[in-house]
Image (cartoon, rainbow, N blue to C red):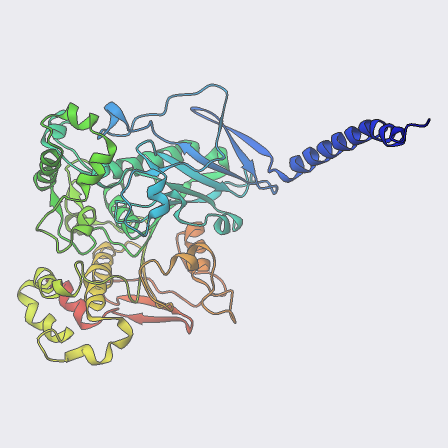
Length: 515
């Protein structure tokens, strides 16, 4: 009798090799397609070892998490950045690094979730590893009140496509990057603090040594930063001008002093003493061994009466005597005509008075001193509408005063002194809608045009010209006149176009300048 199951059995047995062949073919095909889809690795040799980045398929490449200094952990906590140890083999540079250690302030949640003390890395996009002529370089210093942020905070791709090698750097933040201590000063030759600025300088020195291997020109390096990054750019422009680490500077939404008083070493050491007390430690070894979580918690509790809001704690320039040798006002007094080109731009509305509406009168007294009455009249604080009636497009009263004292007038003041002896400088106001702190970033870095009807006229076009030549002007763009103390020339950029003007801010900035 015929087995009723024999046909089914033979079919099943006979189909197994066929299924195996199909499965193997599918795996081979999938592997081949994956290999085609995956970006090819490219290798670059540096002084410390070989780095493997990802090719963009067009001659350029991306390198992520490139170390420019040793991890500032353990015994290296609160020390100047140290050299990277050489490595053997090829180091993978295809994964973004952790941000520098920071608290979660809400607006930096992603960075805070993935932050670490081991963070002194940079990200790099190059459009061409082997150009016929070395390419201009942009080094980006991120913002975040010098207490938050990371190298991932900007889009590097569009500028790289424009022929620029783009480097974004990280630096120690908050209490780990800017605190001073008597014990640290004793250990470090009478100076301490500004470790975050030291990290930025270390990154710039790395760029000078290595950027040629990535297609960049070390003689054409522009530094740029926004908010606290703009402040740091200003400080580096004044303090490192004799080190020949960069050839131009563009700061957005930040000045060397940020409209705040500076802190001297003793005042910053007093903050360090607060830190010791909150952690209940009494020596440097214990501080260096303190858990990171405890340090970050203590950072939130530090306080100084010199400012109206402790969120600005790390936006006071610290004159430590080594990195920042004197107050910015003193450094600005003797800027030579041969100084590097400097662009300073701010938004029509930036931030409110530190501490909000409740701190308005204190802030006016703090900034204008004996001219308080005139300032109060201007803003209508004394009950007199004054100039307030026509200021609806400048935001709330707290925003107007905060923008004027910390950004608009402060920026004019800095450039007037920078350009006093003929140094090349340009001033801009961005009036995008909505206007707010950091509103300029997509226009400068992502290439968003001012008006879709005229895409060629964009802030990025001026930015690229400046990076390439040291002058923002170029063919097809409305003229952007140089700033001088006499003219106070600036351009306003908005959906209506680019319009030149003089003496941005008018009478209140004149009053600010006379304080």
